[in-house]
Length: 392
Ligand code: TGC
Ligand code: FAD
Figure 1: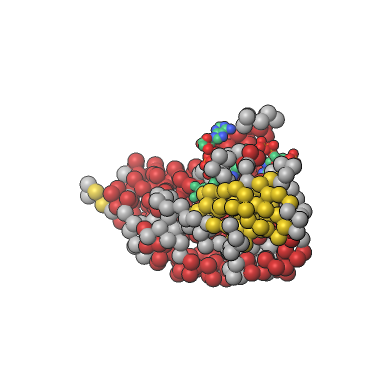
Figure 2 (figure 1 turned 45 degrees about the vertical axis):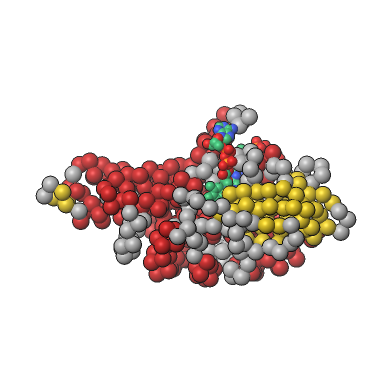
């Protein structure tokens, strides 16, 4: 892969809206991505291997539980810093950001919000340091967009629960130490359970042959009469709102993350267009290429402003789930469109692994589907403005 010459675009001087801590956190993450991710990520994606050696570095830059309080090992940062870390990591690769999203918002968040003190003390510090890695099992073979229909279930067997069912498309599952698993009890009520690797009847086969998120490990979670200790049930929230509450936090991080992927595609295309000549002049001098580049920076700037404002609302505890859906949906589509246009600016070179654009583009095909599909987020906005759910 060509050397990483990334220059972050900031067309509307948004740096002026950040405080010193935001800039410090952002710059440390940016530097780490340039040093540790950029040199190895293309080979990892080509080999379809998650680069596990990055886990310690992710923990060091605060990517595991950025907003979890320091007393539990988290970084104790605000929502803007959390977003900026996700932006910088996804500038490197959406798959690496996925690992951080899952660990922070889908594993640490439910333990922090729905767990008891013993569970918090037992798991959170080790998850923050990367000593333990987690995954999140909501999606099932027959229930993706409609998780409320899940079939995975557990029954009370005296001093433990017995868990049966299957989850698929689970990020990090092949190597995770623990899984937050959403399952129905005998009354049909959804609860979260902490399932640990090594429990008898629990297996995590890897899903192969993905053309997207190749540097992220995806797999299944299979539960065949798994005995789960009663103390592993998250006691403080149940119902579908519990997993959906975690998704709010992860979807917010994605809204920031994909701006990073878009910035990388734009920056690469701009540099290439100025260096590549055809018909006796740089292709950046042709109106058709300028249209692409000008529209890219316009869309990135709009997404940056939307997301910064959402971060302020999150810091004030005022952001709604529907606002998060709008930002996730808008920004992922924006990034995917920019990746497609940027790829064209590079001509044939755009399809090679010498540049990051095609990898971002392929990754974003997953990002537009997971954490709620593009269509589901549109229906969430539709429901919010009309008051009428159109899901069923
Ligand atoms: P509905 O009846 O609307 O709601 C059920 C209960 O949930 C509450 N609720 C929420 N609570 C918190 N946050 C949200 N965003 C919430 N949305 C809804 C709601 O108030 C209600 O509470 P209560 O107390 O009244 O029971 O549920 P529904 O069955 O009609 O479904 C609504 C719908 C379609 C929006 C929801 O099911 C949905 O969002 N579906 C998409 C599924 C999804 O996003 N799956 C993601 C799986 S995880 C993943 O993809 C990780 S990828 C990670 C990576 O690698 O980065
Ligand atoms: P479906 O729900 O079958 O949807 C298929 C199509 O139908 C979509 O276009 C959808 O928008 C549309 N559709 C569905 N319902 C409606 C409706 N009511 N109205 C209009 N259109 C509708 N899940 C986890 O639990 N944990 C993870 O860690 C995780 N990681 C993932 C990693 C990757 C790489 C991928 C690809 C997925 C991951 N997922 C994970 C699963 C992801 O959340 C689901 O794929 C997603 O929620 C969609 O579910 P589905 O694929 O079953 O599609």
